[in-house]
Structure formats: C-alpha cells, structure tokens
Image 1 (tube, helix red, strand yellow):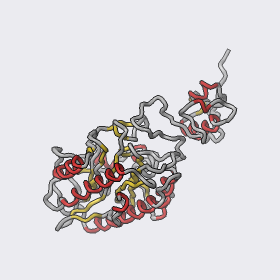
Image 2: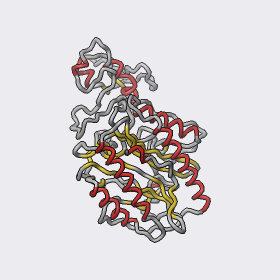
Image 3: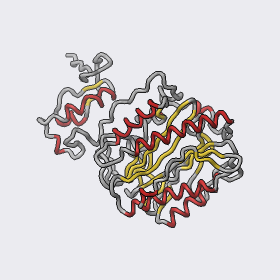
Image 4: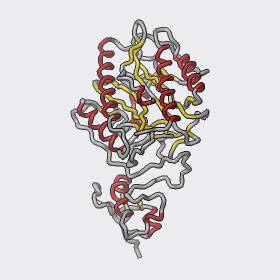
Length: 375
C-alpha cells in the first residue's frame, strides 16, 4: 500500500504545490493539519496563520504571542531579556533601475573575495567625489530613520523606511542580501552589539537602539551608525551612549597621513575603561570604497596587531562597540547574525566613514551633533 503524497499546503505557493516533506514541528506537536511546505519561503509565509487560530491552545506556549508573532529559537539560552519576534516580513524589492552590488542576487560578495589581502585602495579625485555623495546620502537616510525612533514602532517598520529612503535616492540598501543578511538595515536593541535583524518587536520606552545604515550608489559604499534612546532612558544607558560617541571622536582626532591604524585602539579602550565599559574585540572598523568591506582592518582595542599606515586618499570606518561593564565577548543568536553581550548588559556604537586628506581627515558621513540625546 503506497503512502499518500502530501503537496505543499501554502495558500500562496509559487512553485505549483509540489510534493513536500517540510512540516512545522509545532503544528505537528499540536496536531494542526495543513502544515507541510515545499520550502522555507512558503513555511514562513503561511504557517503563522494556522498557528494563530484561536481554536488551538497556543497561548500556553511562551514562544508564541497573542499578536501572532513568535520566538523561533525557543530553546536557545538568551543572555538578556530581548527576544526575536518573527515572522520576518518578505524580502523587500529593489527596482531594476537601481544599480546593485555583485552580491545582490546570490549573497556572495565575489569582488571582496577576489581582492582580499590586497593593499588598501587610494582613491583618485573622481572616486573621492563619489564617496562624498554616497556618504552624504547615507547620513540623510540615517537621520530619516532616527526620526521614527519612538515607543511602539517596530524595527521592521524602520527597515521599510530605510529601504524606501535608499530607493528614493537611487541607491541600493547595502546590507540587503550581503552574505545572506535578510534586511536593508541592521537594528541592534539593548544588549545586541551589532547585526540585529529587524522584526516585529516594538521599541519600548527605555530601550536604546543602534541603526546601522549603508548605501551603495555609483559603485561606492557609504557606512555609518548611531545609537538612540527610545523615550526616556536610565542614566547608565546615557553614560554608555556618551562614552561610545567619545571613543569614536577621540580616535578620529588621531587620523592623518602617517598615523598607524593600530594606534586607534590605544585611545578607544582606555577611554571606555575609564567609564566602566568594555570594548568589543570580535568586530572592527574596515576599509570601504567600491567594496563594502576591505583592508585595512581597524581594531578598537589596545595592543592589537593591525597593519597599515594612513595615507591620503584612503577611506575607512571607525565604529567602536562599547559594552556596559568589563566583558567584551559576544554570543550569537541562532540566526547567525545577531551578536549580543554575554551578560545581557547593554551595548552602544557610533560609526563614521572617513577620508584621509593631505592635511588630516574628512568625516564623510558627518551630521549634526546630537549630544542632547545623552543628557
């Protein structure tokens, strides 16, 4: 007697409802029918509707919420109180007229791999002009996104705002599909150090959120981020954000032709320590030009072994990630992107894209200083 063939049970299956073996494990456990799918896209698009039916005793599961969102990593040992809220919204589309980086379709930055280890690129005047333009637009988009930071706004909504603002400027939102990243901006809340994935969680009074924006236009990238308070935040969070901003500012003061990249950490880490904070070591600043990430590496901690001397025409980022307390290590969520503090304490970050000039440094992503955010 042959087994019954089950076809994809997604109501919107784009593949013609082929034979399918991917079943939602929670639906199986609860005895919910209609939960076989041909792939992850159909699974993500359809199964939450079935799970949210009030006839099922689902609210007993702490990972499924009344609004239909859920935590997909229920057995994971989170370090703090933050939890992901899925489903993620569908991948946002980029119109054909917008120029795209090489990884836009398959997620693989092949140009980066091809040029790995090569000397840091020196930009000519035309290339510097393109960098100035894309960095100016990146600042505009970050400022727009920041204006929506308030309690009740979801991080996914801010992702949509950033995505649309990029398209309006004829630019590609660079994080989208970079090494498979699913969204157009990184949004890192509270204990998330970096690479937070926008989802259905609403920002709450007292949160802090880092918004990391990168645009790609005319073959060049502009990258910056800032951390913002959501409503009124506690004094510890204010001090953390202020310290992170000061760490970046102190490092920028050293930048000029002839300066060593390894020396930046000598001013960043001591300043963080003097304010009761730690400097993350796993992530660093980076070269940026017609590649999203390239040489030089720019560590933010002391006694690092970074190679390279600053020269006129180089463009790179400095982006110290500063944690409350003395623990600089990281824990990654099962999504393989979200990096959090190991103790659940908060983290803040600020980033600028810089150009070394003949006489010093130009902050290409500079904007209006918002020291009032920390007061």
